[in-house]
Amino acid sequence: MNLLRFKNPSLDRIDVALIRALDEDARITTAALARQVGLSAPSTSERLKRLEEMGVIGPARIEVDPAALGYGLKAWLRIRPLPGQLKRVVEIIQGIPEIVECDRVTGDDCFVARAYVRSVLDLEEVIDQLNSHATTNTAIIQSSPVDRRLPPLPGEA
Image (cartoon, rainbow, N blue to C red; front, side, top):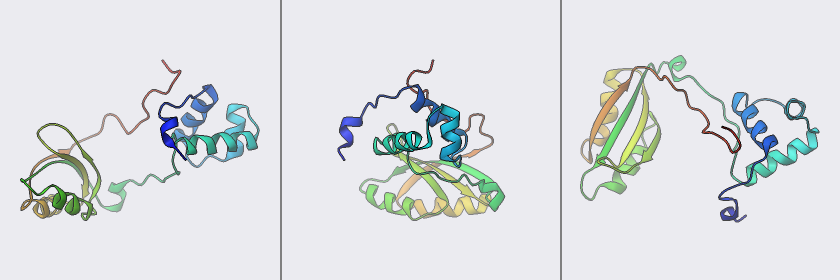
């Protein structure tokens, strides 16, 4: 499938309603979704398939609370590879399971990564894995006033 043709997908109000409903509860049944948006279950299923093919939605995922698993400390790591170490730093980041997401960014640092650890000592161990190949700057997350959310969807104010 050529995803370039879907770069700016055209979404109608039903598509937006489906996306919002799935964002609230990704485990909602197709039948319940259909009732919510006023379509038949087969029509709803087709729309979901089309939204997936367009790359607007992906597979459903569960949301796990890391704190419930003992990872009570969250941190952002800003990572700046030393000269010639970019590829090696990427490999190291990918191999650290406590790093749960990482973005390559513009600015002074090359990467911003989010890590979940059990303690400050564990955070130090994560940082130590990077120190011979990069400089790091770490910020412990105190709270998150805005949870992960969708950006405004087409047709919404």
